[in-house]
Amino acid sequence: MDTDSKEKKLSLTMQIMLAMGVGAVLGIALNQWFADSIFVQQFITGGLFEVIGKIFVAALKMLVVPLVFVSLLSGVTALGDVSALGRISLKAISLYLLTTAIAISLALTLAVLISPGEGMHAGTTAASYAAQEAPPLSQVLIDMVPSNPIAAMADGNMLQVIVFALLFGVALTVSGRKGQHVLNFFNDLNVVIQHMVDLIMKLAPLGVFALIAKTFATQGLDLILPLAGYFFVVAGALVVHGIFSYGLLLKVFGRFQLIPFFYKMRSVQLFAFSTASSNATIPVNLKNVEERLGADNSIASFTIPLGATINMDGTAIMQGVATVFIANVYGIDLSVSDFLTVILTATLASIGTAGVPGVGLIMLAMVLGQVGLPVEGIALIIGVDRLLDMMRTAVNVTGDAAVTCIVAKSEKRLDSATFNDRTATFDLDPEPDAEVKQAT
Ligand code: ASP
Figure 1 (cartoon, rainbow, N blue to C red):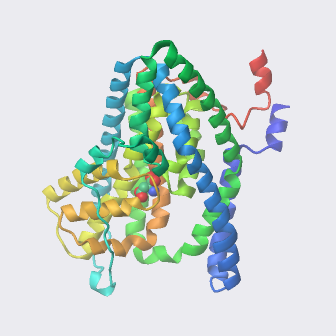
Figure 2: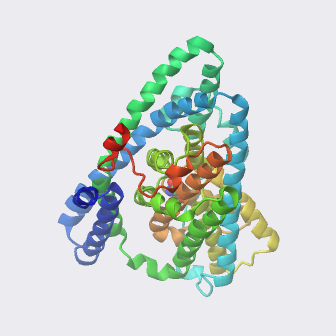
Figure 3: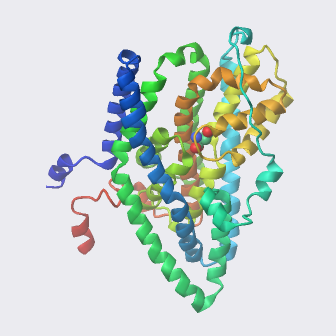
């Protein structure tokens, strides 16, 4: 009976994977055979796919600020202990910085060994890239405190929203009975917003299909060839970091079983891949670590949005490989101290990199500037950046989830049975007999 109904209804992850596969094949086909068709460009790629994809991403983003604010309030107050908050922040931030430093070191090692871009000359490609100003670290720190919390929410400035929610949560905890009234309201609101997430996730297969089809139809695969060396070193480093570094970390710091973790991360990675935005993936990542990996809301509601804002391992990998690639193309030698500077700047840059598509490149300008490489070099790699952005975002969100599980377990706020249970599903994707199980 169980298997029967499972066969009839594909799980959400399967639906998303299928949608993605079909979208990729269709996109590549359109790119190959209908690239000149005005109809396809205007009405299919630039029309239908664009509209559906954008609506889907907007719908996800719509939930981020209310979800983070309300869920973080519930989480902080559930901790009930302000000193725990300091401890958790310290653990999470240290692990986030550690994973980023590992990521960039790995990327630099691979890039130096494989040396992409050697023999290619910048003179042959008219490189031009107007670098945008990357904010200095001091400004990033000052900007963490919102002078106007409503503006912070309106702008979707996540660090500021997190800081305000933490403070508000602490104040609620110490406000006694009055605080409890306000808190009850927010706890109920949290449940309502969770249901909104469920509703939007029902759209996921369609949204993912449109986003992927549009990307492949406009980008095609031909772009990759001239930059194959660069592309595959970044992709290789992302895979190695995504599997081995996180695997090692999960084992060493939490003695976790790895298969359930990676198995359950698939749907979150697909969301990240198709939206290329850690921020837009927050609702799904949060839901996944809580409902399927067993992390308590009091930890996850803080570490997931924080990670989406400051933890960018995949982005750091791209920046490491790009630095070596650009140095090779321009025939500039990097010294050991240059490499150390790259590790330090890219790790710090990841804190200031917002979790939205393409920002990694802006922060790359800062890294290049630190070691005296020409910022125009970015123009060389911009063509393949969209696809790499999708891949690195999938790694970024995996890092957020891994650190969340480690911190939650160290705080004894992770349900290992749920973590290890392969059949644990999202709420909206219930086991056919879940209600029966609950009732008994
Ligand atoms: N798209 C990335 C993210 O949202 C950031 C970047 O690398 O551009 O995580």
